[in-house]
Image (cartoon, rainbow, N blue to C red):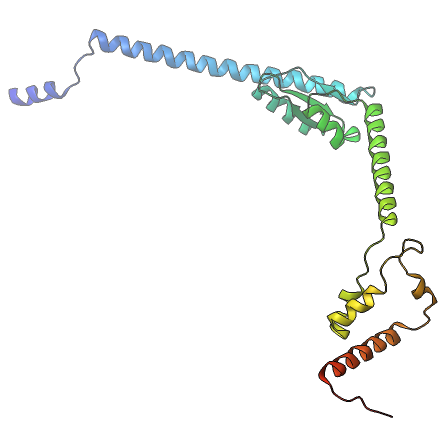
Length: 229
């Protein structure tokens, strides 16, 4: 009996020491502080959402406003504002180079920003529709002037004839070279020499004559007699 009682007493948890009691007290206090901080954070988020809902509602009802720019705010606040805007059917964007300077802009659906306007905000510039329209017109005029200048230069340049490359597979490289030689540019008559302007032969006739001259030349070089009629 005494052994059983001793075994039970030894298995029982010993009463906490003064040090253990202090550690547990601090742990309870820390848990209470964390819970209070979480409740405060939750309350602040709810209050901020309620405030944004009121401002977004006023913005929608104000027909004189097309967009609204907010002061820089933290990531959590921006996230809440984006969510409120989406629920309300608005378009929202965040701009700013760093976290401290980032802000939110709201746009009504019927006044959604253009790509040029968004690009201006991303660069940290103010958007002015009149200035943007002037820039657009200047770009169009510059493009038209460049195209006209390019066309003028192209018309003033007389390209070399590609006659040789075009017909070399039909009449041979040497014959095509001879034919192309007759089409070299004449400065007084543009790209066509005077002799060609008076030549009434067709291209096929000219090619046949060149072939005949080439064949006659080969026969002369080999000493083969030419046929007589």
